[in-house]
Image (cartoon, rainbow, N blue to C red; front, top):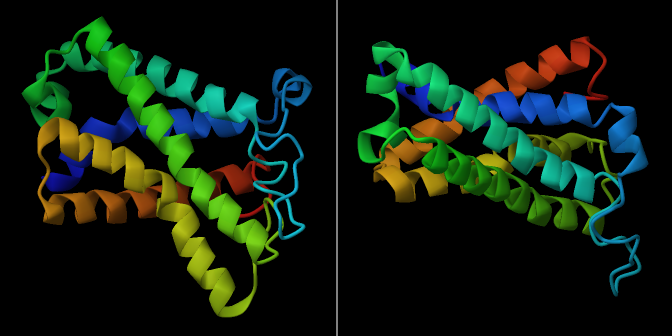
Length: 194
């Protein structure tokens, strides 16, 4: 079943995203949450990225993805059901070195692909961590669900040769998973909005 293949392949990114969101609520994060834009203002008089895009969150997501990918690789190596469904391990050996590198690349793609969305939202006066109303709100709600996925799944496509159809399926499933995870984190009061 295709959904199982997708989850068997990208579960480390899902786990890392949740872990990083929890990390942003810790005292360690609060003492090291320097904004990536350094508080600088763009030529339009607005912040470049805003306070929510921090170096701690940036490197936290990369570290969380490396840890999750390594852990998932160990779990997968002891399960034929997971191993046979993982797109990465069809093309690469499930080794510590590969999982560390893949986790770092997936984590980097995740955080880099969120930045253009934050930049654009500051230009159109959507506050960091807030949602807009009406059509603009709906459009950015959808973009918020897939921005990081676009890069992560592109990396997966380069690693494993996904078709365009498979790429789109990963994005759609990822968006639904993102919404479900955000709903859970909102219910647990870890997120301020869905």
